[in-house]
Length: 85
Image: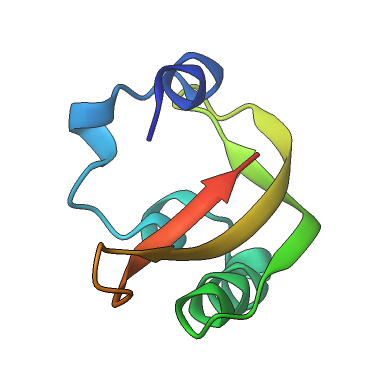
């Protein structure tokens, strides 16, 4: 969660870190597909230009274009997902 994500959504980093992004911040009709993109990235499958809506703290819909890839530590082990939107 970076400064731009906080600006767009109205949700500061401390309000989203430690929470389940898909379950808490993605609408029900997109949860399965967003989860699949993130799970794929954890399995070294890159997704480019995946579009989905994210809702701001005020309930406004914002379209996000996501590129998701695997994040690895210095030893090459999967440590998470890098999402650029």
